[in-house]
Image (cartoon, rainbow, N blue to C red; front, side):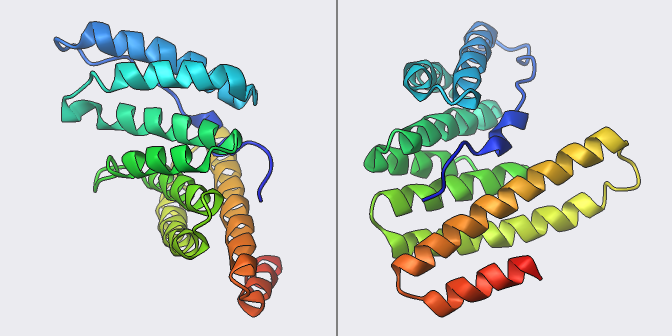
Length: 201
C-alpha cells in the first residue's frame, strides 16, 4: 500500500467564481474547498473528512455543467480522504462519481489524478483486477500528459517547468508503486518486476 499524501493535489488552485446567478454558492464552495484542501495537504485527515464533505455538499448545488471541474475536485478530495482513513467502499463510491466529471476538456493532469483515485479505491476495497485495469488507464493518461507538457517547454519559465516536472515525477511514482503492489496481489510477480526494472532504466 502506498503511504503518504498524493502531493499532486497540492498544486490545485481555485479560481474566482464566474459571474452567474450561482455566484454566492460558488464563492461559498471555494472557501470551503480551500479549508478542505488545507487539511488534506497537511495530512490532517480527521479534520479534512468533515471539511471536504461540507465542500462536496455545496459543490453539488452547482448543477450547471460550467461547474463540472469544481464537482470533480470536490469528489476527488472526499475520495482521497476516505482512502487515507481506510474506508474503501466510500472511497470507491466517491471516485466513481469523480470520474463522471472527466470529459474531453478536462486537463490531462486532472484526468491522471482521477484515474489514480479510482485505481487506489478499487485496490483498497479488495478489487485488485479492477485496480490493475485502472492503473493501466492512469499510465496511458500519464504518457499523454507528458507528451502534452513537452509542448510547453519553450514557453514556460523555469519555475513553471520545475513545478510541472515535480508534479509529473510524483504522479509517476504513485502510479508505478500502486501498480506494482496490485500486480503482486494478483501473483503477477514477473510483470511487477519488469515494471520496477523499467522505472530504473
